[in-house]
Length: 296
Image (cartoon, rainbow, N blue to C red; front, side):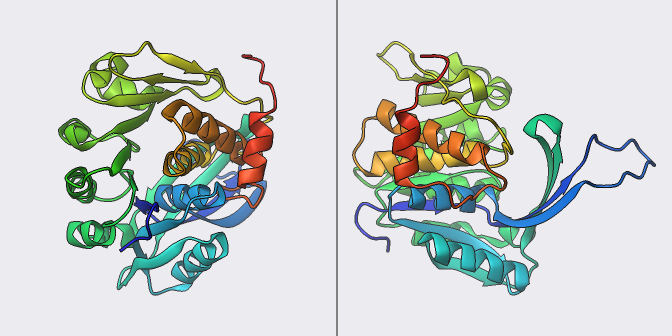
């Protein structure tokens, strides 16, 4: 059972293998890469690490293989202060994401789920008990997300957060158990638009450099500007937003103030290579929040 006030992140753990390219190859074409790197990743682990570095006690729930990649991810959790006791070790290779970095800090990603597909609803539900905030994404089986959210929603005072990425049609069936839905422009459009989603739950609509909007029933939309940043690698910036958001919620901040924390965390990650840079910290988030952005 998680510690009082803790954030529980249920989701994926991957090793990110980076290659830098000037452009994507055409079918049948061979290109020489410009750089190569290996980093801990996965939407679930990225969000857990971000939440921990933003000041929340965090438990990670997921699965890795009994291999060198799994060991790397466990060390990443230990180093970031994330409780990984409920990350199962399974007889399947650890998940891998192949990340192609393109000019302008853009990226293209192919994910092979591996051990993430072995995470079961029963394990996720049991391991998320006792958390104050439960954060789920969809790089694991949607059935795991659905069961975790349903169980958490039945518990008084637990805040449930769903980052609907990668987008899946089953999200609509989960919304009754979701307190806060985080979607980007592509995800919102695929799910029927922000207006329709906001009729069922609170929606945070992220738009990259254009900032984000908080939609709450009974309140006018609240615009939050982006934090100024020179992007180096946008991989994991959205995950850092989610981690900063739930860390703020766990500390008792209002939703708008927690979203500002998330925006600052995302900006810090976008300005560094890899989805879990050491530069992200609660102090760094405070500093970014004090820096004006062009939208101000």
